[in-house]
Image 1 (tube, one colour):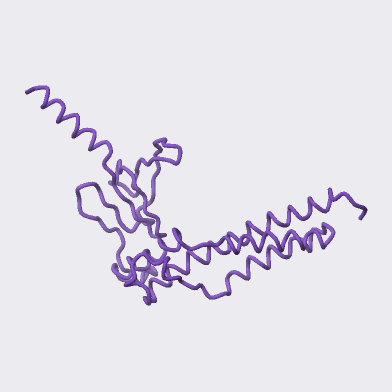
Image 2 (cartoon, helix red, strand yellow):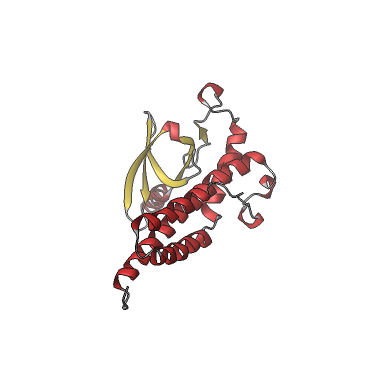
Length: 206
């Protein structure tokens, strides 16, 4: 009998050890973790890294929308306060964050990266390795990503109830546009460096 009791206790401890809490940030990140302390101005938590190592981190409560501890109801930090620029209601902010989450997880920027890589490499080589002309394209190309309309494809929307929601679109566009700018800058910078290096080592007379 004692053996079964001991096994039951061990089983419960194992479940507790693997129990996951969740943090939802204002930027749309969903963090699976184990919350250690949430009494102060920060929430301290442990999470598992990509290399299966347990690491500790913290976030200020102003960065968080809510936390959900295992077996407990969600606790929401966000409150609507127009004086501080928080003009969305709690439910509207949930929709806004959903847009950010979908854009972060599903919006693709490979074509933006590839175009910047190829075009910058070609222009850097065509400019004979000239630094000013080579740098100009990455800057212009990255800034240009602030202009085009962000098209939200249906397959990237987790909840189709948000499909024609303006608040959702605002959250989605904010993250998607940032991803486009970063991809454009990264791709064109790599292309620029590649073009200059290729020009310098090209096996023919200049």
